[in-house]
Length: 290
Ligand SMILES: [Zn+2]
Image 1 (cartoon, protein in one colour):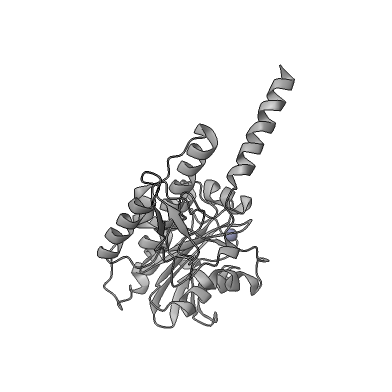
Image 2 (cartoon, rainbow, N blue to C red):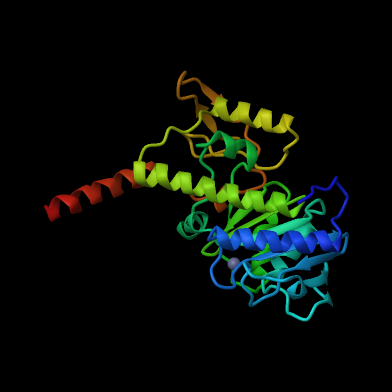
């Protein structure tokens, strides 16, 4: 797959080949079941190729794809476009720099979306630098305007989002970027699940470490991704956020950027008190079984 310069679009041939390839990868990696998932790629300022509805994304052929305008009208193709096309069209409308959108249901990240949890803990250096925090879009009824409305707040500031009780949406300057973000989000979710759930012990990055990673990310030209939550106050970038650095215990003001774009009301994190209570209950249940 070739990468395009900014403001340059792939040819229809390239766009269709790339959609078929991402569809195969998505299916092979078990990120979708049955006919789930959808992919779109823009080929001009107002046209895009889209995957059809009712077809496994692992076995698509070129003739199944549909050419649409950015209002969703069919320009070419014999099949119906994806039922979630409104979500894709809204991403393009909100952020004209985006040229491809990928939607799938990868199991670990989707489990976070079901739990009502954003992926916003600073646990992996690569995740902080590469994809940043992944906010949770509130629940929306499939096929309605609620879906595009739920994702719109994140399209200019983040690289993807979880869809509550549904799956994951990513976007990028080309379809490979959007796909790699989908892979990175699933990896982040899986590692988070192992470390929080199976091992039960997580040493999160400190505010200073996150600051330095975000500085590096910005130097590399990545301006989206927000900022993960501070490890000891569960906030980011809020004026009231006073982070005590874990090592020095100095109180300092969090310089995060993510909060303006993703209101704290849309984030839900696990309260440490709840975790202690859950552990206590599990211990009691186990003791009763003995
Ligand atoms: Zn879906």
